[in-house]
Image 1 (cartoon, each protein chain N blue to C red):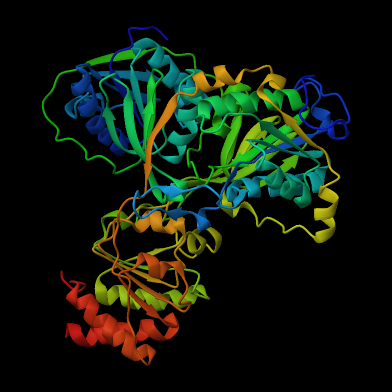
Image 2 (cartoon, chains in turn blue, yellow; image 1 turned 180 degrees about the horizontal axis):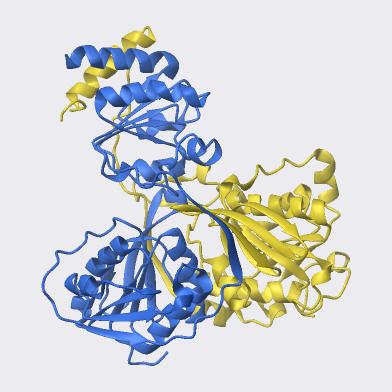
Length: 321
Length: 286
């Protein structure tokens, strides 16, 4: 890449996340005294004004029929085309699953590093990108610095707030990029029945682990959730292995920050811990007194959830009246 | 061929052809990362830093499932499973486990490369993969459980100019094509790709087998090849210089929990106490 790399570029195929990236990028761009670029990729794309109102000084648009649906190879070509045109010194990509497939390929093509799922970003006096991210299975936070340009990082959803929109002005730059056919061809697609369950905003979450023996038994949790006005979450095996629920809480799933988190029959792996670290109060119910969840909890009951949960629901109901 | 660090008896038995040209060997190369056992990792209470020294090593769990997937594909379609890792002397134990599970041969890039980033690591692994050659599929876990970067698979695909499929939870092969089911946030997809390709798998793809005593004994007679960087035509100085992400600090966040165990004679009494606590903590506030 050339030496006169300048500017901060952000991209996500998810609009909400791209707006959050504009918030993160604005701060970096101001510190570096450079422009902030947003990238828009797709077929028949719209919404450049939205990006400008949220802080983009310039919007690069790659609009091509071959980009109607996300696939790594065509999207890689689009992002590379924009990076080569704009020559930014920092490139932030939204850490959705698709973003995490795309970013390392772009980084490898640019022969640069890339820091994954960064929750805090800054630049140091040498204009290097410095980031904080989880490591060691989610038990630790690493502070890392990129020493090669363009500096790259992926950023998970909700790490940065969406900036307040304001009336701004910005340029729209349309790019022609040669878009290849993807070699991995999607032959079947099934939309998931439920999307975001709102776990990330829920003030109270009751959560199921492998201590539940049957899917039907989750009603014990549903009854408790109703009394508490809680959302229902679970650990990874309940969703990913058993398929009883749609999404899980943990390192690879949702990261939650409720006022109260009630872990029922959850053993408390390092990965689950990474998803509930920001909960204010954690309560655990588990039969195994040696379960790690008790290390992570404020209050623990060593007992059979099949007996404790109905009793707890009853007790709460009585007290609520 | 470059110099081997291992003894002659462990040399691979045949010469390897440039990658892609000898696909009929049908190799499945499983990339394995040998990491500290995270369940045994302790945090130093004074410094908040993890104590990695002396912690038992193990194959990163998702990578082990990539290896299991490779073995199952070989069992069905023939071919050869190669376990490949960039590591050090300690990695031999992990590779022995891979061989005991069913890998046919193991390769370790063993040199002074600890701590280099994913940019550098994938260049080293790409060189090793090219030298091994004859593969139809490269498999890895969606991420290593220590570094969590999810970078090496896609980077290898880029460096080797191969198609990639990430997050596979089911894999089948037919007529030189691979079909994968993958799980994204909003959709489940079935993807088809021509081989050779790179695939990353998720935890749900399988349960890795536990090797029998007999297979553990047999593993010791299978070939393990160790390459240094020079054997791959690389220099450790250049690789370390390439490494572009520098780790400045690693620290466990300080989260103090009360860790109060609610003592009670019966489940009902415990529930009663818990209900009081939940109310006191504002559990029923609207």
